[in-house]
Image (tube, rainbow, N blue to C red; front, top):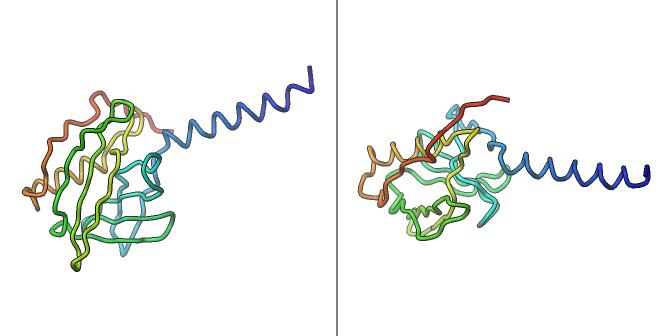
Length: 148
């Protein structure tokens, strides 16, 4: 009986760690005094996280800033035809310095942690660059604000 306690304990600790990683919010980052809020999940397509700040869209891979696009450089913010777990997959296309970049992502958000980052990006894009926004954002529906 006691021999099985170690594998069972390891299994459940791994399970709860994986569960927490899947629903935990990405940490906000600060760059030059500007607070960046994450608006993407990195589980499906790449290890990149997309952040929204007052200066534009920032792309991080781990802790390294890989790209920065001003809001005027965003050519398209659109919903694709794909769905993962009933969440629409979005696509953001940017042109900067003659280079064309496309990032595909699911908006970050859940019942517990909200979706402030993508709300902020979508509303700001509608004000600053409305021609780039190709789809309507309605949110995830019901939101319960629980802080841990």
